[in-house]
Image (cartoon, rainbow, N blue to C red):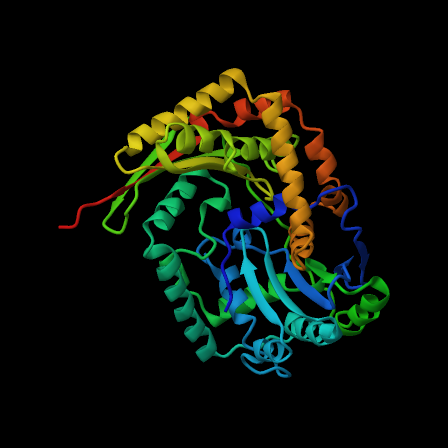
Length: 443
């Protein structure tokens, strides 16, 4: 029922957040208990997306309690004195709505989408479980088994996920992004009811949360409802968010994994990079343009060189995650065609990177990349939840509404010279982790 979304997918969503300045035109206010409220009026359909974001993710977990943020995400559906176990989901489904939740490195979020005349019902449910969650020992142990099974499915039985987990542990030497959001299996197996309740009491408070409502709603309607249901919840002392500094990388790192489950080999390389809030934050917009022109579409440089022109690979691309409190990452990847080797694919990636650093992107590449980003952003407006996701993720990590609303202007202002400078700053061998995934013959 609840999905552990990868940060990368979320970041990709965030890149396509706005198409023109002030496109969302959100309103915002704050309750006396510290709860931030954002309203995005979009009356195109008589429905609303209600999201509650908490400033608590896996990177905030104490050592030895890996996975506790995601564990509590699951347990938040176990009920309160007013709403029994599983009743939250049943009530939403009965009204024809959908609901889900996610945990990432820097936040945990819950959402429900319902007809706009059912808005108050969702607000009441969310306020209730913000303060009145009840957990039995039996519920906790049962859900812990569910999460162990989830880890088996999404990580332990997938060689690519296993390798990605190992590569991330190398990319970040000290920063908590090196640890998996879902947690290590041996630590998940020891999480207890007391651990879950301690996490809940430390982080789930109105002054550590953001309520974002998008759709057929306005401030005049939402404010009294928010005051009625969330206003009585008292503010509590929450721990200050502290993150360590990441030491400089001094040597390239390399991983190779072989598995009988692998059908097609692949090569990927990730680099630690500045983000919206870490390092040289001015590079974040140039790196988004770089990722787009280098490998985020069928017309990008990597795809054209490796899939269309030669053709050497079945897939090739690039990505960049910028929406993080700590250092982001920039990556490239490729899978060779049958008849070609992973060594050939890696060599082609190296050549493409070397050519980019030597000559830089063309003015036309930069212009078309910016145009594609803006076009993707325009399409994102058709999503009921999309604006709430973009604003909620930004505000939860410490960015502002203005940061989100000004995204198109900042992307449009990126120059070819800035893209090349960002590429040279990030695409350094000593800051890289190369991962090779190979088939292993069955015995």
